[in-house]
Picture 1: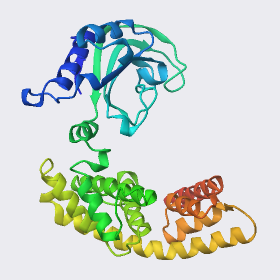
Picture 2 (picture 1 turned 30 degrees about the vertical axis):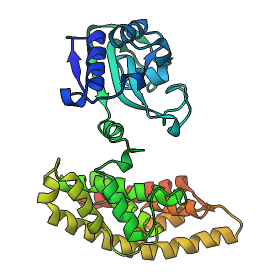
Picture 3 (picture 1 turned 180 degrees about the vertical axis):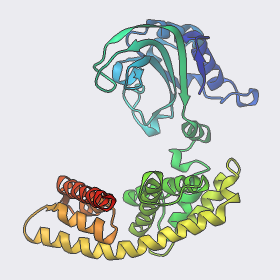
Length: 360
């Protein structure tokens, strides 16, 4: 992105975005076809509409007015806010209907958002329903471009999973599982392969940064990412350890821009292998218990797993509740989340009471 604090404003931001987007690659730009670029503006922002006409020569039909939900930005709390203008690229009729981003955001992919910070907002719920208090003393520019969206466009890929840094992981996962990606015959398999490719690459970066799988904070996020990758591979029919193999493919794709993933790969592989082994044991035990509980629920004509069953899985077998929710849903059963949460609160209260008693 590019940012300005009290220096340039709409005219320059629009000119910079247009220049970088459309200048040929040999001259330092991205080389996008200017005739395939559409933009959106806030319905009240006549200035931005006029600038797109004058600076970029865009016709009115490719300047789309939209409301607050799409084209007015705030942080969700009192502070700076303002209208924004988004740039979209028409990827062709094979991907959807004509008519611009208001009609089809698969065909028309957003790749850059220009936020014109010119107002101050007051108290209000979330990102809507708040008063605009007036103009800021200095106007600011805050823009963000989608790096992987731009890679998708420049490489002519159908989606970010098929770009040069991601597809090798996807293809290796497909080869291990003995399935084919993108044939149109296995939509569920395609989703699972994308989950694996995305999660393995994310886990690689987290592990390279020194995060270790754990039960709290970022460690728990990493644990969930790794375990979801393993489950996706098992759904694809591959039950052997796969993480180290897949992480190595991700490493080879990512190392040119992130050499740390190669330098620390032995440590990365050790942690991933340990987590996969531990999860295998958890999955075997927990799945047996969960399947039996689901069978009891269905046998009684119900469709709701008691919170106590989810708590037992969590507390006794180390089975994360998000995994219980996911696996129960796959069998057509919902989980009593409120009951589970109540039991978790009781457990925490008992632990605090025990800690106070020990101190006394």
